[in-house]
Structure formats: structure tokens, C-alpha cells
Length: 236
Image 1 (cartoon, helix red, strand yellow):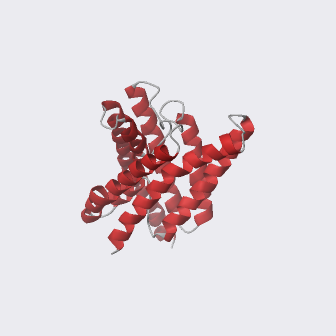
Image 2 (cartoon, rainbow, N blue to C red):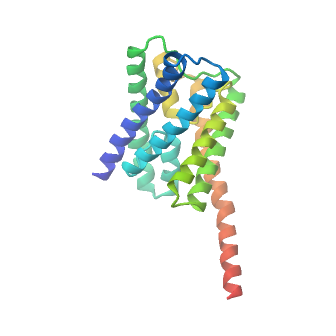
Image 3 (cartoon, rainbow, N blue to C red):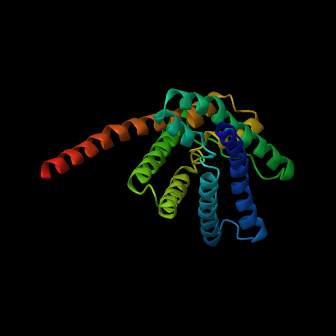
């Protein structure tokens, strides 16, 4: 029953996630008429952070629901093999289907809204960009989970600001997505979801970066923890 709840939660949150960015842009650019002026960009960033707080709260309410395959992949790799199979075989497909469904509804409702993130540089440059951005945010998330495990607001604030900053850094090159599910939603609508560019830049590079970040984090943190434990035992 818990597994079904997670799958449904992943689908709904992924559906909502692709909508939130579109609604924020419509509200800032069209409803308020701020356009791309500095005040409009600042207001949009503020709404994006509020939105990330909302989704973090929804993830807590749903007891683990997520909209990003990289988030669940990190926990799936860290867990046992059955959890990994459940993540890869059920949760990630649910997120992908949720994103594709969300984008389809967006284009039916707002046909003029655009076509989502796109690759504006070469494949190698794009893969390196998405890989580095993903490596950074996964490392930050792992560090926050270890250093301040009980502080929801502080952890969410640091994570949200970090995601927004990394997104801005990569927005002109790859869209700064760090979320394969939301990207494939738009790519599926354009019909380029099975191209080499999409698979290498938005799937393979972020997944490799996630695995490397997990491996390095365990490699570095575990010896430090053991060293602290040994020094504490010696002092006693």
C-alpha cells in the first residue's frame, strides 16, 4: 500500500511541477506585466523559492513523494536492491508519465506558452553542464541531510536557494534543469525525446553525476566520521 501511495504521489507531484514554472511565468510576465525587467526576475525568483517550499512540504505530507528522478535514484542506490528495483521500475516511470501528462495539458490550455528547455550548446558542453549542476545539488542535498537532518525550514531554504542559483547558471546553456522527468515532458511534446542529445545531456549525464556524488560523499564522509569516533574514544 505504501508503494502505491508513493507511485501516485510521484505522478501527481511531477504533474504539478511542470505546471508551477509555467504558471509563475504567466503570472509575472502577463498578469503583472513585469516582463523581463530586473524587478520581474526578482519577483519570479521569489515565487520559485516559495514554490519549492510548497513542494518540499508536499513531499513531507506524502511521506516521500518526489517529482525528480534523481532524488529517488539517490535514495534507491543507497538502499537495498528491492528498493532500487522499485525506484527504477515504478517510481521514475510514474514521474516521467506525470510530467508528460502535465505538459500535454499545458499545451492544450496555453498553446502559445513555448516549448520548454532546450540545448543551446554542443552535446559535450551540455552534458558537462548538466552533470556539474546535478553533482553540485546532490552533494548539497546529502550534506544537508547529514548536518541538519531535523530542520525542515533551514534545509529547504538552503536547498531552494541552491537549486535556483544553479538553475540560473545553466539556464542559457541547457535550461539548468537537473530534472530528467520534467525535461522529457517537453521533449516528448516536441518529438525529440529519443534523440542522442536528449538522452546524453538530460539523462545519462545527471545520472552519472548522481552516482559519482553518492560515491564520493560516502568515501569522504565515512572516514571523517570514523576518525571523529576514534578521537572521541581515545579522549575518554
